[in-house]
Image (cartoon, rainbow, N blue to C red; front, top):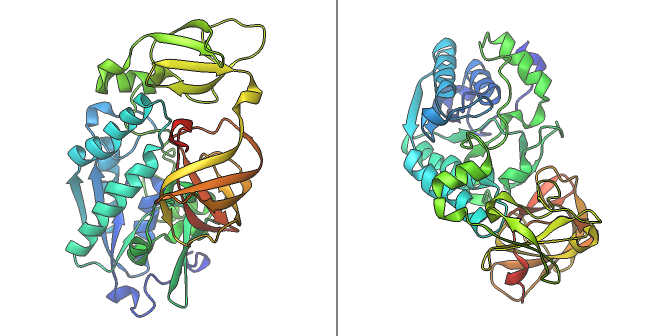
Length: 372
């Protein structure tokens, strides 16, 4: 069975038996199979699960709390490798949950999964990996890490329906030296099959969905974190004419059509969120079309040349658009010019650039107010 599933050696200069691998285990099928597979191939596996938030917040489709921690522990015990649970609730609350709320309050749309990977899952877990004297940190992400002539690159997974490269654009070259993604060459159906082969009780466990710490909906979660954010304000058109009233800008995101609570002769969309004035600006769909994007807090795994043509994803579900990347003259910012107008580009989302299958990096989409 295992011969059918080929995994690149985690290290070229060490055998599996000589290689100590920390595996980040969320309690889901993917990371559990990654750990079990490596253990069965002879690697010295150490499972680590981060408790990221209170178990009282758990719901179906969440991860990293409650039942999921128990599932990870049970997998480690059944397969036969050591497992540790680390409490990172305070760090996760400060760097991911509070950032999520603050981003919405600024009138932007956050991507907390990127922030989580950028901070607690990679930055902090890589330090744990070093502290344990391990050689590599392994995760169950569907993404490929390729190494050729000493150069490491990050690429989309074989299973395009599960590809998670968008969420890993902030990974640095230094981090990639220690990171490994053994599932990048598999399809999800392969992973389910392996879970059954290893006798894992979570083989049919549903994938985690949406944002793990959101117990009800976004606005209710934000209201609990920042009650002051739920303030009524005006809904105005692009000319400033008042069309109605909203019950908090955190309930809206750029491109939204449903739930505006106003009647009009033509369909209206959220064009912009003016946090300073506590206003939601709405307009016709053509007001949402955009070709020029400013991005900040850049992370390049390969520095793009001026005017370099790439494919960019502007949200996780975006199929991708052809574009060119240009310098702005400002530090840590770049301008992305799309070949064609794109609908509903939202500040706070990530703009991730690809050269074929390779992730070259990206940045965070700026609000129009940040443009020069």
